[in-house]
Length: 407
Image 1 (cartoon, rainbow, N blue to C red):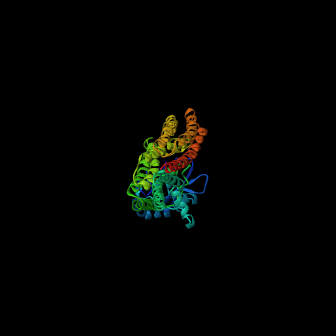
Image 2 (image 1 turned 90 degrees about the horizontal axis):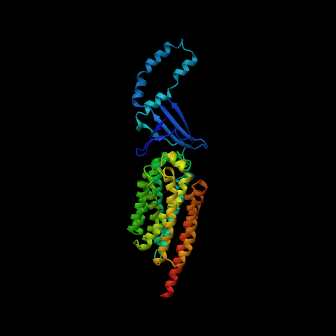
Image 3 (image 1 turned 135 degrees about the vertical axis):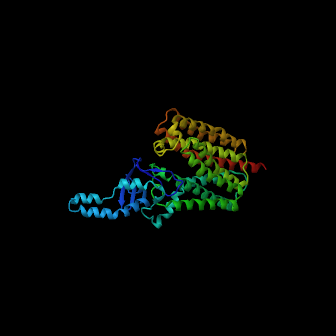
C-alpha cells in the first residue's frame, strides 16, 4: 500500500492503490520517483506525484559513489552483462521507503497543461455550475415570492452575489475533497481530481469569488443578505464537508445549507426575514431529504469506498424512513403559505397533488428500498421543486391581484 500526501497540509493521505478504478505505476527516474495513477477506462490522469530524493539519501549515494565505481571496475571482468545491467537499475522500493520518511517534499505536478480555450469550462466545473444555478434559482424564487415591489437592480446584484457565494462554497468543497473525489466514479472527472487545475489556483478562485460575492451583497443589496451568503459558505465548506466523514448528521447540516438561498432572496427584497421566509426555508429544508437520500442510496457504494458516513451506507433503513418523513412534512409546510396570506387557498389543493406524488414515491422507497425506487424518488423530487415554486409564485400573483381589487 502506498500512501501519498499532497503539498497542501490540510489534505489527508491518499491511498492510491485501494481504488479498483485506478492503475498505479511507479517510474524511478534518477533521484526522483514518479507516481502516476490513471483511470482504467480513460486516458485521464487521476493523481500524479514526484518524490524528490531525501537529502540524507542523496548524500549517502554521493558519498558512496566512488566506492561503488571502484567495486564495479573490479568486478567488471567477472560479471555478466545481464548482472551488470541489473545492478545499475535503481531499487524502486528502497527509494519509495526512504522518500516517504519525509512527506513534506512531495510535490503536486500538473501532468498536462489545460488549453486556454478550456479554462472557462474547468472553472465552471470547479464551481459546480449546475448546482450553483439551482441555488441561484431558489434565491430568485425567494425574491419573487417576498412581498413588496421588485427592483431590477437589486435583483441583478442579488443574483450575482449569490452566484459568487455558491461558486466559492463549491470550489472550497472540491479543494478539500480532491483525494476522495478521485476514488468515486461520480466525481473522479472533476477538475482537481483529473488534474486539470492546480490546487493553488482552485483555492485562489474560491477565496476571490467568496470575497467578491459577500462584498457585492453587502454594498449593493444589504448586510443581512451578505451575512446569509457568508454563513452559507462557512456551513457548506467548513462544517458540512468535514462532517461527511464523521457522522450522518451531515445530511441535516447540508439541508440547512440548501434552505438559506430562499432566505437570501427574501432578505434582499424586504431587508428582513418574516414568517413567510422561514416557511420557504422550511420547504427547501424538508425537500432535500427525499432528494438527496434517494441519490445517496444509488451512490452508496461510491460513498462507502471514499469513506463518507452517509445514512445510505451506515443506516439504509433510516435513510428511507427519513425520506418518507420529510416528504410528508411538505403538506403542513405548504398549508402555512395560504394561512399567512402569501397565496390563495387554491394553492393548498395544487400543492397537495404534487406533494402526494412525491410522498407516494417516498413510501414505495421506504417499503422496499432498491435502486429502481430510489431513482424514481430522485427524479420525482427533481420535478417537484420547480413545479412547487412556480405554483407558489402563480398563486401569490392571483392573491395580490385579488387584494388589489379589494382595496
